[in-house]
Length: 167
Image (cartoon, rainbow, N blue to C red):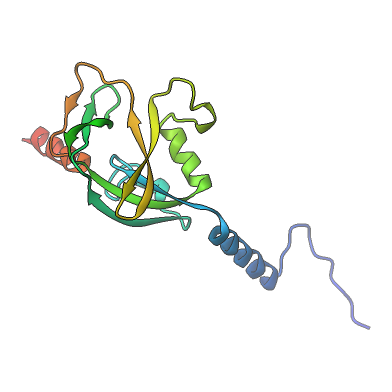
């Protein structure tokens, strides 16, 4: 007769761990995916892009928008904001994200979908992109000292600023 060893609580065999890992992957594939357009530090070479380095986030591509927007350097926040009215093109990266990551990104924009009827820093709008219907976030309140970024590329603007500061 064979003796059985008692397993400690939380112990998993290799087969059980593999099964759990495959279940997580399957759930990620089944989770609803949403396209989101990002023009600020969330872009690939931006400082906030770490949040998007996850299996449930996928870069679809980038494009220059129609000249319907104006990008501002928000001096007080060390970030940029875009208003949905204007006559400039902006560089937008489109990401496919899961609902859970969309929620994290919205919170970083101080946008709370459950309270959309209340005043917030940003508003959410659906726009058409070459990749399909895409969610974007636009600033509501522009200050007088906020500077227009004419070229529409926030990362390039930051690189230019840092290069001129070093001189």
